[in-house]
Image 1 (cartoon, rainbow, N blue to C red):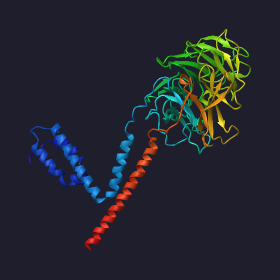
Image 2: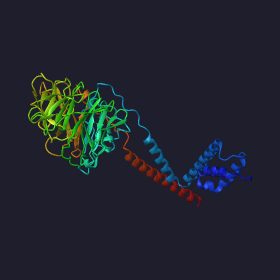
Image 3: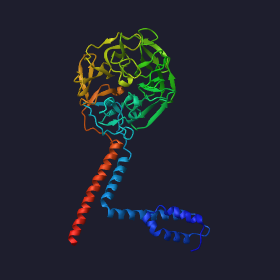
Image 4: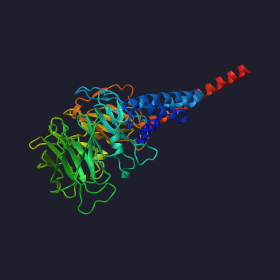
Length: 494
């Protein structure tokens, strides 16, 4: 054998390292000798053609090695093959989100119950949504809280994994602050974790997430999305949720332009609690905390899209805006009522649900406030469904704990009649809170008969666990059959 430079030999040996160990032990020196003898004079490294040939030969060697191992141990080999196939199939990209036609959003007459097998919205987008809610409470260790989005036209259920991933330790497992857009096509998710906080918006038709920083804020809570999805009203604070606010530190209202990323700071003197955009998206009604109000007794103002105050609203004593969907579709009225909790920036994240007892005029020169005496005790405001129709939520049964469902009822302002619309089962264990509806397409509130719940692909941990169990089962069955076959052959030869 003619002597060759060391670099060429090293190049061949590096390629041969990819062959199976048994094969290299038997034939590496033989292959190396052939390669060196066939090399051109002055050659210092393996050519592209030689690399391709060695790659093909190595693949064949590994295939033969795998076949030999499978014949010797068919059970484990079958299990490994089943595991690989299952992981591959469950990791393939999900199909496109269900097609959605504009203006046809519906609610199921009964929502599906809680399930740990509900897939993620990020990997399997549900398409346009009709509802967003939290099911299960983080304070109960036996519960596994979920943020759930429900399809606007089909029985698509997905976990809003973005809100669950952005949860902070102070929330004890509850999802981060979240808000459904009026058209149901996107969700905004805040941040309570500490500096630097930001806000994320996810497109429910594609799963795409965009994130915007908000200065040096430590906590952000989405309050209201404009009907066209262009502006997001945010409660922004400089102290994390689990820390006390430093003296003089209060939540401020920021307006985020989702098209440009520009943040507009408003000049409100008191922390924002609830905000609601007008139907045309030109004005924003803001409920402020009573403490620090610019004028005693007036805690509600109307801002323009530029963040400047346009006028003050006189609400009945003790009333507050009913939530981000408080503005009626015709722009005349704002739903108000007695609040269910203290004034603070976390209220919108908890629903800001109030018992709506009055609809006040939203513009100067409007008629007097409209009383709503027929609202059932314990009912809370969800959204408008037409110019004279409200959607309300109430537990069923209404008294105490152990409620089996949350009812959604419709209240007619003209007839004062309350009619059932839908319900969300809780089974007495998984409470439903922070319920948001896609307000833009709820007029009239059309109800569909529920079909089979489509939950998308199982969450990744469940898919991997099922794959591992399936592989173990296949390995056990194949191994048992192989041992039986070997026993029979032994008996036949004897």
